Length: 328
Ligand code: NAI
Image (cartoon, rainbow, N blue to C red; front, side):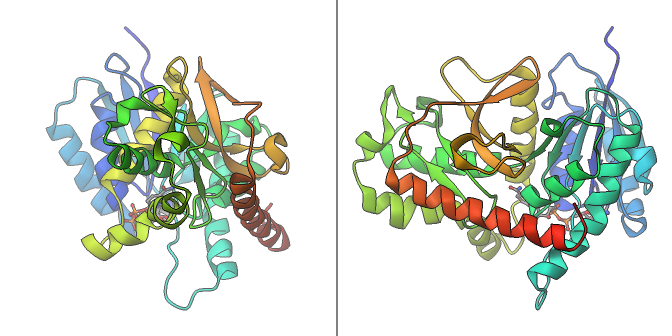
């Protein structure tokens, strides 16, 4: 029998947490033969609700779920963690400036990064979901000098999945017919969903679509502003789809991308494609045996270059702001 994998989830009592935990416990994160121990980190006000969720997890009698621990202490939550999903974050409230938002999140992600550094297992893999995800990942990574920088990733898989669905609708295909789509840059309104290297049923997606105006005026804004459209329609932000993307992100990281395909992940730049080294930016990546590589050698046209640069510029501004605040 396999040793259980320790999976830590922060913000466990939140709406993404509620959509996420049951899928982790039922084997969708790591595989249907991998037992898991769950560690739930919440702030003190969230502990009671997390306990309620844990009662429901018990009541599912998941064969793979070997234990649940609930705590408000990051050092306990990350002890021996193999996978950490950092979901809890400080949302932007009315009248809050970006600097306030970054500093409030720095107060969460800096200590969590340090707790990961000091307590997690050597093979720790971190996914930051809580926004601003890329820069929160950068803050946590900077606070964990003993952990290889590439273990800190930010989620752009929801954007990737949103783009897959929009492109399938436009081309009258299904998402399984689409390969090699890329989200570049920041998980924000400046992100760039790129179909110039994507394939639809083996044909170049941009040629199949053959409509640059649709790309610029419909596709890109629909994907980039989908979060706001969900809030408008549902009266609450994306939760099940965000949880699903988190599951996909880690599952792909651990189990690998399919031959001939790639995915999108926010990862530490090595300087590829003119993205300054050290920024956590979304790239096309292939994964294998728990490691990933940036897809190299893609030709970036002018349309793409301008949009990648704009999103990367925003990431640089966020990095400079958290540097000025002493968070990295
Ligand atoms: P929520 O407000 O329902 O839940 C957040 C939970 O985090 C709360 O239970 C809160 O008590 C907890 N929390 C706050 N600070 C914490 C800390 N220091 N340690 C542990 N727990 C803490 O929010 P929801 O809807 O679950 O969203 C969570 C985050 O995910 C938000 O920042 C949201 O913007 C982000 N998000 C990111 C997406 C992406 O694609 N990267 C997509 C959708 C949401």
